[in-house]
Image 1 (cartoon, rainbow, N blue to C red):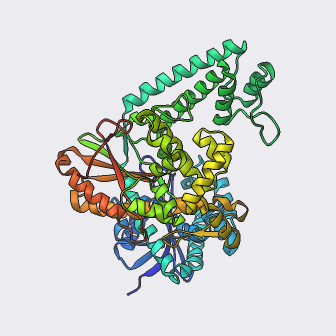
Image 2: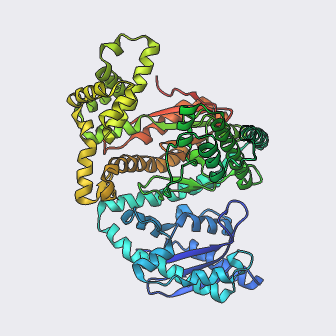
Length: 588
């Protein structure tokens, strides 16, 4: 029997549900537009009645709950009820529905979509903000909040009525949408578990960074002869380009010399070798690093666990992202474009009695470039375990590569790998020459030879760009339609590769979650997806079985019938922290 659809929305005191914030009200709307608002605060009898109603709502299993950002609403509800409900719910998410048809839209927030697509006025939000006392919506008068909540569930139901029929009508869309729904409870369990911080290391690192930032600022003041604020664009501009008369690398939209972008200062540093640039880079890196580490401490719970918001469908390409805090850009000790990197990964540790496993899709970007280019020579090479970058090095450098010393061969291989990635995205002969470290004329010759050897890769971006200009979208191997701006058709290749990689990783996570539940009784858990990688926290007491378990993880991660190229994963193990990892072999 079909379940009755009901729009459901929660109101909370804030966004940090795993630490200080909680739910104080909820609202529902049926398909006929009948709404109901229930408060979970105030007098005892009201709280008891609303709590019982909420529990019955989710215990009946007769409803399909329609939400806008279901992960948040379910998390708030689970916290209030004190039990897990997400796995047993039938859920819909209008935010994800909107992404499937409006991936380029600048604002997929509920109220903006309700106004744009259904003409539902947005003045209720302004009324609530004006009426709140202390910035918490629970302090707004209940009459104003009731109208606000009623409109939100009406918006949600209307959006579902607009989007969901289009999803149901297309088998590919149905599969994609179900995959997104399956990912929600798995992601909730990752957020719930959290990633552990070592508080002592955090405080020591902050102390060191702040001291180094102070030292750098004093050095800059000695160079300038006055108190310069390295974070002030105007003061840095005055120092570098007026007083020191250094060359202008790039200007802002207003025509002023740019000082904000790291790459601008790095190029200026390379050109001039001026010590003022060093001190500015050092100060900015260390002071911002200290602020970041302090924000981690502020967001951590009493046990030192960070519970990030993993956004399963926020990026235009459908890739996952992370906020509060962003754990996708936790800096490493060695970063190519930052001469003063922050060793922030050292402060992230496994729980006591656990280790970390990092399972990364091996060369996924190049594999997908080969798959979409239909370059048969490279498809055949992958299928026999060959290395596309090795072949590229032989194409670019020939005998010079084959006869080179091990050290020189590594350099040539790295250059060839860079060029091999650049060419499918439409790199010019000049860019290829730059990547290979050879003169421009020679670069044109090498690119022409590469074109004859591997024409599919060279023509990939022109072909995709032509389609984007004609149709306005790319379609991933899973059938997801990603709209691409026609005036930037060249980025269609990036959307296609990133969107397909996202589809692979997002389908892999529920598979891995279910497999770990079965193989380890849930003792091993996914902590986080990072780009093309998942991080697993694994009990030390079960390490004797780790190879067998991780072989099983590998199998469910690479089993995709859509591709005629092999997928694979690399596994690393961290026993001490996120920074220090060693290769962990799971095969023969």
